[in-house]
Image (cartoon, rainbow, N blue to C red; front, side):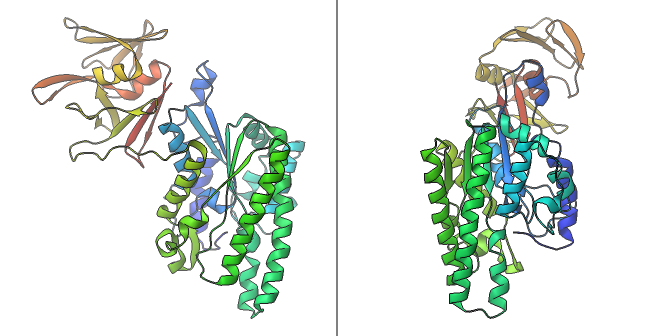
Length: 414
């Protein structure tokens, strides 16, 4: 699925900066490199649905597609998660097959080697990353993908040309037979690179209310289930997540079909994210509704900090939490020196000392300048609470901290 709109190029320019970095926004590869626990790696493959394209994107837009929702759900489940997105606009199942084969073989390829006339402005960079793609797949814990929508786009040309339903049905069956072969080849290639990864693929939806197209979507799901069953016999687990039914009756609400763009909007991508998360983890998590005076939520190791008299606050776009709340949540030892107005937090092999109003923090005996505002005292109700900079504390203790502005939530994971 793709659009030839000029806005697409602006959108892709910003995505190139984000996606080609090879990690999630705010993800922490440095922590893994310094001996911290290995992150939970998510790899996304496929077409524009995986890329997260929405109608009306500009150069200032940041993608928030189903992949980002899956990533956030990993954080909600207490995982030190990172993700990399290789979604390519206009990609078909054969193109995915050829790209994955090149990655598996260690071959460098050009866009035309896998699919002619790809419309993605980033195609040279993305297709040229076969070595990095193979490395990402080998280290992945979860692989999510969407593919198949572009295989069916020629059907629209047949409809416009006045082809009969019988001709279209025959053509769709030919497409789907080839789709089945290409998809199975792709999944076997992925499994050859990483036999332990959890692989989840979405079925397809169609917001166009034509019976022949709806029938094609139904038959594609049958193909997916058949491929999954065959792979299972060889010990390869491919799960199919139900996206199609979520869009039925919500086509105008979940897509931009009214603007002649069949891509999901933010509600559609959220629905896809729920479907993927439910397939992977069995549920879809959210934070509690916040009161008007509460600026953000904090989730620690999969559990949201309890609502109380000392809500988290933002200062200079940085997150601060009440000292006792966060240390209790991470299971750290806390001591307070009233004379020096300083808090000592001990967790595992790390010891961190914050002094009220000080621009420095002591980490494992070393004095380090803060990149956040200092710790401060704040009166909440009848009590005065000590507030610590969440990112500085978490990173000093070897934890992953990630603030998701989309949810106004900070995640802290071991």
